[in-house]
Image (cartoon, rainbow, N blue to C red; front, top):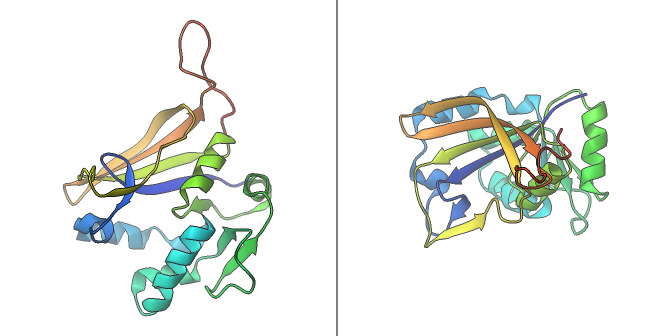
Length: 199
């Protein structure tokens, strides 16, 4: 049985991106980029939805010689979609039309490599709510994008308790936080709540 990690980069106010800002909000540094390179993407299976696939495969086609995308190109990837058509143009990508939660549940049982999400907010939310996520990791960028922020990550999430597993700081400003999540039935208190279906 393998593990599943949800992996996000976020602004301090919880957005995945912001209109008009550069990638990484222009705040990536050498320590953080070296860590990304050392992560060994080829050792994971990337999971994504159709929107992320269209965006990332487009970037990969535009920047075929970029070292970061070379890693992503080589990584085995699974995209869940009812709108995309085979064959997919992004190399090493498999299209699956079935229910993502049930497919990932089976992948966790049979896959030997770790599973990790790429973007895909609704997919991550569904996998977390189903209790399939073993690790929830965010790298927090020290920006607030209240006026320009796009894609609020945590809207419509269930209540979740997060137990800190690892933390570190990159380049003196970017904070990595990795948690073990436990989905709650409701707020903790005298009259109920507490862990629900956790992984």
